[in-house]
Length: 275
Image 1: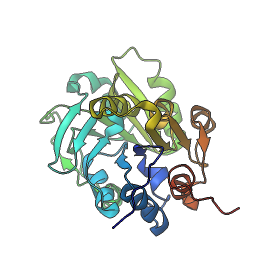
Image 2: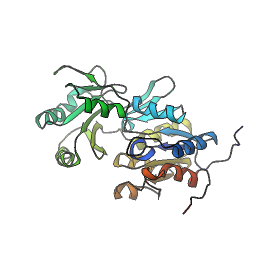
Image 3: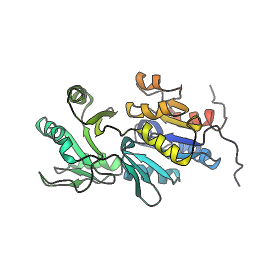
Image 4: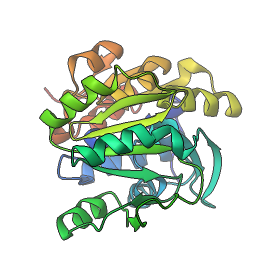
């Protein structure tokens, strides 16, 4: 039987890519065991990710966790047990038509997401399929002009960083009801203006009656800033951009150095890190 200790943080929100996983999309044994130890000692662990539910659920299974996951940068909160949508921020497809037209004109890869499915309008080569597979996704191919069946929660663009820098700068000048989020070095997401990890985390905490000061969040990128600011303790990875580090209360090691493990040991399990 695991001895229950009184933990300073009842809820721990973990970003996935660039935080929980290495850059090779691997979950190290040390990090997995630290997450499980925090859970066994009474903390509630939840993933709070830019991924869709399919990719997030793969990581939940590796961790041996259940519960609730915040996906698509806060646009869809999902029950991991029964795969039901608890809440989502969706928008009609016509609101992204300008973004889609830009991608088509400039030959930039994009996909459209409902809470559970990802759609593309062109056949994906094996390299693309392998990339999607790393995130636990099998794309659904639609015919040009065909409408996505269901409510959209995200348009994602994938390209090299230089291309995305130009695209992001232009899109941020547009008059649109949607928001443009840099969710990774190679990714930009377009979503509902109210969708973000911090708002989704707050909504979940209020529903569960968990005080803000009893929440810890760990992340590494711009789409994590909202939850790092909301949490009683926001921890930025060493591999985070400076703006993300500035939004956090503390820093830990990089995702290549088991940063999540060391943060949990230091702030939750009370284990002093070796120098």
